[in-house]
Image (cartoon, rainbow, N blue to C red; front, side):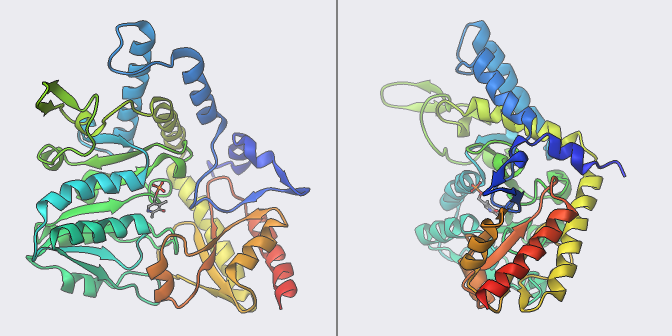
Length: 405
Ligand SMILES: *Cc1c(COP(=O)(O)O)cnc(C)c1O
């Protein structure tokens, strides 16, 4: 086994923290992952040695900052196997990437057109399309979620038609962990000529991404969910689509020429990057991806699967606990409710024992409604979690249940 979890943990300084005398057990990785020292160092290094505005300085620091910034773009390009670096746009995160696409899409849509999303979306990948449809008179349709937590692919097939202009779905559900068959789903949409966006917020950290193999038009993800900083993310989009699209935000950098009355636009990717970009965080996100890519990704996946399998086995034996979402292919998420106690109470009492989980609707209210729950307690695993932590979680849950019963 080429995976040494102790050596990984050593690289994450925050994991040495204690909460009220208990060692921190961080199981909220679907909300944000912790950062390895090399990412923290990359940020400090940038601000210590070459902080400068990019693309516009005729001096050494500006040159260095630009070089590192654009090198980070190349790291993202390679990470998702994008054909061209011009297709990688820096964003503030998945949410902004999706909004950039919605802005372009709204101009394409008209009454009679249809957009398809799913019943397991994060609000970022649902409300955005609701708004684009409302603004254009298009209709939003959604793929139902089966009891297993998988998408109803027959229903998806039936929704597709010549009216379908755009399809969006998550690579991995943040609330249930379901890994969707994104390649097959994309191929089906492409039979009808629809554009396809994959919300990769939960996919990027857990699965190898190859946008050319997926065949989609857009893939959006966030730095902070793959061991990088908050406030930075990337949107990949096909040049053939993006080059035709209206501009998003206007301002410096995204222009080519400006007169008092008019302006022309810069080339990709700068056309979609108005204003001073988040240089330091982009560089640190590049470092996070470099760090992750240097690991044996199959071993990482196997480790995360072992954690999930162990947790699922313990959950299935746990009295009064119901798992929400039992898809055959899942990535690192165990969502559940218990017979006693609201999810918020469970989260509170776990925190008292040093264990960080997420409770609530996970920005997926329609999905919670689908399962008739007010919310769930969600345990989400990452590279640095251990089987011992899973055992500690269930020992703690036992105490929680006896307190709430
Ligand atoms: C977190 C998340 C988002 C939003 O990402 P931000 O980093 O908050 O912009 C969108 N979709 C899914 C599936 C997510 O998990």
